[in-house]
Image (cartoon, rainbow, N blue to C red; front, side, top):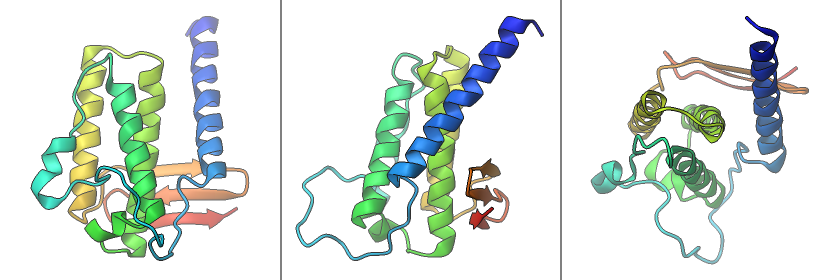
Length: 169
């Protein structure tokens, strides 16, 4: 590997760590077990219903996939925060952990797509994002593992069993 490639890879890893750390600091992956807000939030449905699950599929377009992934991240984050996600999924530790893993997967793809990807990568990202969402909404393990170490805690997710969560370091 040339020094330029090593520098580029290192910079990409640093950007991912900073982005995920800032997302954690803002509470994007927090699991507030609270009741729904007193006033209804006037937004479009963040999580597809059984009848419209395919309507929100990510499209394999390199020019827009980063924005599509970010919209999906925002929708799930907002639905988790306002409690509407738990109208579609049972609010269990298993599903809580799966939603966190799902958001980590989407964030990873979104950051990479922001730097620019080709049509083959866009096709792969769209297929992965849609598969993860289908499995999440079906209450199944997502199929891929996650291991992320932060300064004070670590997130692990076993894609085969769906077990995992945050642990203190």
